[in-house]
Image 1 (tube, rainbow, N blue to C red):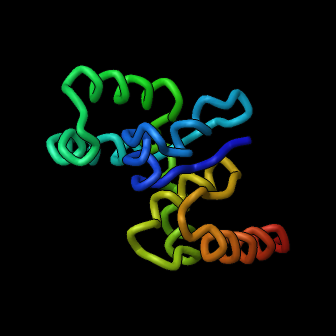
Image 2: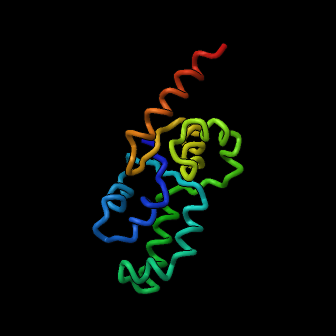
Length: 131
C-alpha cells in the first residue's frame, strides 16, 4: 500500500516507541513525503535531539532510516497538481501533501485522515466524470 506521510509523521520516527517507525518497517507499505519534510527535520535537529534524548549518532542513524523507508519527492514531481490539491485541502499547509497523493494516486496518512479523504474522494469522483 502506498501512503503519503506528513511532517508530523516523519518527526515521530525519532520516537523509539512510535507506531510510525514500527509501520515503516512493513514490506506492505510504500511511504512518500515531500522533500521539504526531510529539510524541516534537519532544520529542527537540535530540537529533535533534545526532545527524544538522542545522541548525534542515533539521530544520524534514524535520518538514514528515513531515507530508506520514505521516498522524499521533489516539488517538481507534483507541482502540476498543486492547483487541484489546493481545492481539496482543508488546510493550505497540507496542499503539497495532497498534490503528492494525487500525482501517485493514493490517499494521505495524517492525524486528520477523515477530513483529508473526503475532499480527495469528491475531487477524484468529479475528475472521473469529466469527458
